Amino acid sequence: MHITEPAIQVLGFTPVIPAAAGYLARKGVCRSLRGWSYAPLLGRLVAAIVWGCGAAASLTAFGIPVAITVPIAATVLTVVVLGLATAFAGGLIRPAPVSAPRPSLLVGG
Image (tube, rainbow, N blue to C red; front, side, top):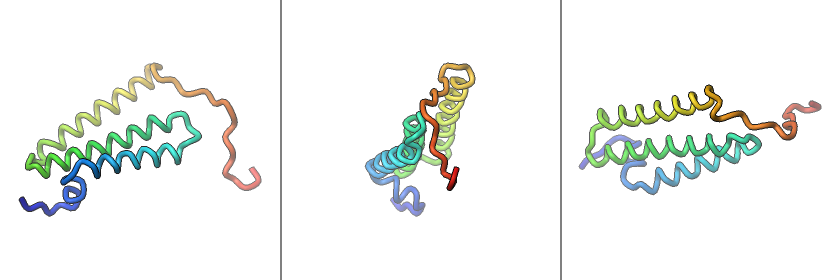
């Protein structure tokens, strides 16, 4: 099998690479947003997106056409995002209370 797409070459041959990339992305988001209560949720969402892209690339490497994998991935992503939006809008997920004022990044502020 001859594969020329770079994303498939990097992500498609082994599931370990997308798994590690998703884990590192989750850790990076959690570290950069460590003061926010939604950091773990956003980190998991980013990791799931990376894992989904890796799964689509792996399926493409196995010979399943992109015309099949991309609509399925887009549908799953849409359902998850709309479910979260509905949960926020409906009040099932409420904003976290602010316990301490956030430090200002401005000099002299």
